[in-house]
Figure (spheres, rainbow, N blue to C red):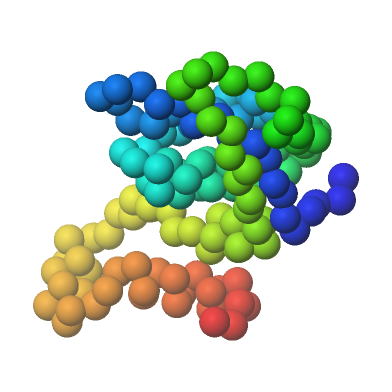
Length: 136
């Protein structure tokens, strides 16, 4: 499956008095979010779309074709909006994200490192990169 650099999908913004703006994607089951206002909903929609498509790509799942705006039936409190996403940026952010790891150290080593102000995350990254032959 060839990965595309850019995708554009319709999102449905649902407006209900006193509630956040709900955002769903008719072509992407399970892809939904919400926002406090239109700008927030748009930003959240873009994040949700990128994350959803990244997961589909990663799992090797088929990425459905987007429905044309004119073919989407809307209720009176809904509006269709096109959301675009640039996938190289999404892929890079997922590959470069940090993860938490729990490590166990002898108490004396922990105390000595704390006394010297050593950043545990940086020290562990440095050692792992050295052991793996990776240049930062």
